[in-house]
Length: 528
Image (cartoon, rainbow, N blue to C red):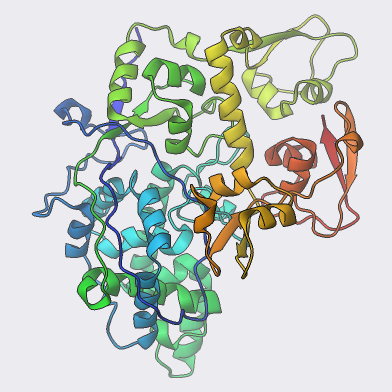
């Protein structure tokens, strides 16, 4: 029998987003970066059983559903607003008008927010935090868990590697907690709570610290105090990004608090959960989880963007987020299943002359993963020794498993640690023109930007492009180890696309950290 499984209440709210009316305004100097749509499929709304309301995998205290008069989560959040976004500063009002005028942009954000907004609202209620904090991912990432900034910040809440690790977000070959919306939400609210205490309950300073670092804000406060100057947010000498960052959130607060003044409609999302996080307790193959729960692999991937590979990480987290009915099916089936069947392995025989580095290169698996999988204390192995490596190729005999595994690999390889750029559509440009310029397909542009009809493309629109300079197929080897000389304009992402490998693998093979910057002329090792 398996140990007791816990279902932690999460959030997938299925209502359609309300449309917003468009007004013509001049945008402020800085404009939020566009991001590709990230729409979650969903099942029908179901009544939630009481036994599902138990602590989750991150072991938060039990939080009851917010008790609001409104049936709409967003309206309940507005009731918890504490910041006066429309007061005193015209820049806040300018941002309110800017967001109100961006009908399609905001609608895409509501689509991305729909799986998570109830969960975020419930956490804010439990912690006693202002409702405006739920709007922060709009400013940070447009609610895109794959958003990747020039400063190497990643995820819905935009954590850099160091801060993510500081707040418990693991980052390894298997998993990146910064993209895990469930985990990163807890981390972000912990971080914001910490800074609010640090800055004596001044939320504007706490938000500034979240964006630019608490150390910088503390230094500027000390500097102003030494000069006898005001130490509030508006009087500190902070980076331009931070000076825009706080007014963006205050502008959203103003917009949501007084929508009628901006000809704006509050989005409608029912105040009830229809998705759960199931802590399995063991490393598990995601395709097998998809099959057992009867949740399509693309939907499972959408709800679990933190996983880099085909399985959860050996040392956790071991939870998966699923639609509520899928979580129930999985929970029921796991009760009669040996947990060891949830993860499949290859078994290899160590041959004379083999080393961990040779095995890692041959099987495209990092050395530390081989060591962890086989409980090796050192790098010494001997001929005749049997080692297990991730992925059992026998599973590929099952055509349904093979199709799902291929789809999962395609989805993961397309978005992990992606360098993305934004193209502003010029007069006379079409998707085919843009696709040709960046050497990508029209279908990719449509998928990345959720464009169903290319004829709707408008001048001035922002189009997200994953840039991949093309190379003649004959110039790329199909096996072995090669060296790529970095050219001007190259990125790890474009090199990975060129050689059809993963960005994470390039970083491992070349011992590159999350903040590493490649330079023209640098030699990059690639194992094919």
